[in-house]
Image (cartoon, rainbow, N blue to C red; front, top):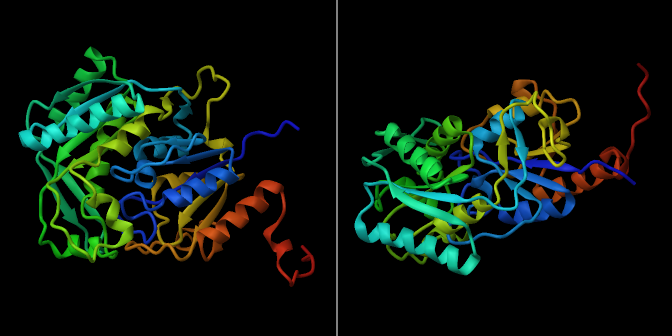
Length: 353
């Protein structure tokens, strides 16, 4: 039987305080499980980055958020690769000892995991990241020297032939921040996630290659009350390993949709289902996917966020479920061509049109 690959997109927006996926890699169990149901799982670094923890999912595609927006709009396609040559870009604002920790993580990834990391370089000026929080509680941020970021990425692409860029920027330390403490205890919003997205978006938008970001921060004081969901970020001096693993096999972007297509290329019209938190429906990617007639959008109710935008408010037709466990059942039925309404005790009569 020649079926086309069943393709699922898993979205958990960055910096919105998602109950599942708003912490360091805590949506990886969801991604691993959906990958068993789907032939292809498309998701983004916010889902798969777990600081020093990661999990190889052979049929998962690690797609940065801006690239995912362009993919959903049909402007870009995804081309799977066996490996990428990764360039490492470090913020000149990182102190020497903390810089060495990042370089040791990269060398460990080369020696222990066999990753192809081409070279590293410093930005020609500190990036000067500043953090912000919106009135609704979502996190975002700014970069004082974006041109320095782009010059550093261009240097790695041109001189080291890098096919993907890992960026490590120095983020402000604020161990006494109430927002940070709330996050460590399993509530609120990741205070750095929104600024991380700004960095990777800028590189992907400019150079059209995969990029992901890892923050450089001083280790926080030990605290026995840290939530298991936030614990991955307590384990060391760097969050870089999961970023390097993700970028090492991230699909390349096809930016000429009208050009020749190769076998294995993935385009938005091939997406069968999109799984989202039920209160985070305002993103560009979801709005684009909602216009695809074949894509079943599944909204998960118990993954609450700090940004209450429901799909119904935007006129998006979704199938609501209570949990990711229920979403998995819907995906199985959808792949089998079975209406979920046939799996409940009471089935209404066929309506007259």
